[in-house]
Image (cartoon, rainbow, N blue to C red; front, side):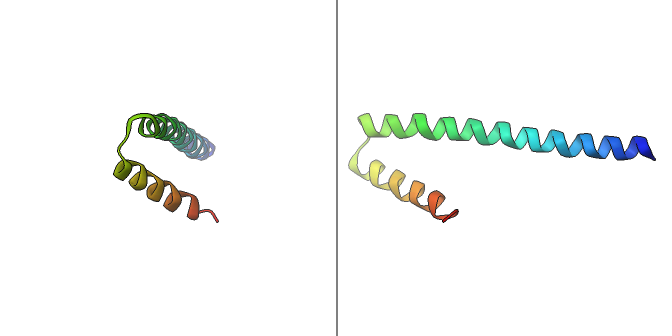
Length: 61
């Protein structure tokens, strides 16, 4: 039974680690894409990105 508990704990840590890794990748991509749109995007792309980022930020206010 202890082995099953260990496997379960390991799985939870693995899932958490994978989620953190995915979150970091998406954060990096947002930063890169935001910079690209700032430099070469159209006004409508900039407005759309601003609205999307505002929605993301409002989730945690």
